[in-house]
Image (cartoon, rainbow, N blue to C red; front, side, top):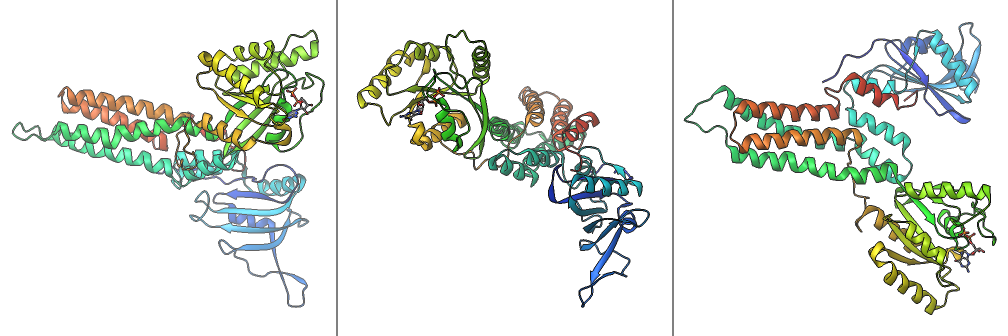
Length: 480
Ligand code: GDP
């Protein structure tokens, strides 16, 4: 159900700040076309190649025009292309104009000022998308997907956002709502015709329907939330180990470029370094820590403190040891300090490590640390030469995702807002189940079913309170 749309005309620079080949000023609302008419002069080339002012006054919808943007005094501000997209075939379902001018900020600001002087109001963050939502072109999950798509860090997060934009979550929530509506219809008949001779309310059938069409899909969606979070936000992976074991070299190999400082002097990575990489589509925030050890150097001390904080925030630790030498007391101490953290043990410098040494380290981890690490995976690499990095990434992916199966197939995953509501809907369904099992009056059932339906309506934005809508759209940038 579409909410009433706002009647004024809004405008904003739709492209990102900075220098670009082109930049776009976008206008939406009833005045869009007249504003275009007032400040855009169409040109067309004559056969002789000279440019002429076009005579044709009306703009055709969805056609790109070449011309100039002029101010109120008729002075040319920029050469530009312009397109008018008449309602309802537009992003907002209103008349939309996009003026493509040169992509420098002063030019775009000047064009925007003229548009505002011609009668438009500066759009609020996300207002174009909000209008698309209010006009009923997209539901709230799709509007949220627009933000996710704009903020996507990896191909995986972009793909998931695109699935949501195409309605994957919307359709699943709707299928669950359909199940609830069907049940409610049956219950309402029972309320309207309380005929003792006819067993209208077939409790078993309703219970079956509740479980199959409502509770199971709700639980499945909730189970997907965790994986969705991984794809959307990624995981924090901290590279830890004593100085000189090859942490910076490992980071460099993972980044495929030399960014961190690598030297032979222990503890040269004074502070922590953070980088983002994509591991099979998952955003992985890599943190290289300064070597944690006893110290008397104040600057390094700062780095060590930060390293400890990073370790606490880590979802996974890559614990690096030098496989060319026996484990030291510091290795053991650091390893114990990981506590319950999920970890991969990285045996580095395998290119110069003796097989017996590797075996000894392996054995020590299995023997000494088995009780704390469970079956922590060990990966052998030679960070400097980039050997074993693929196997390391595979192991990392497996540990993070918790399964060998990929997240590539994940087409739908609720975010925190959805999850909170889905949990409330599930709680209402548990109530429905208890009422059914307890053979309680049908009108009690109707109340609980309606409660579950109301929650699901919130997810897609049918009944979402204005403050929640404002919170969703305020996370957008202006111009989207
Ligand atoms: P960090 O202090 O743990 O960050 O260690 P670095 O990455 O700075 O490496 C310390 C030293 O070990 C440097 O001289 C590296 O060149 C060397 N190193 C790192 N990885 C390897 C490796 O895989 N094989 C060998 N042979 N040397 C390595």
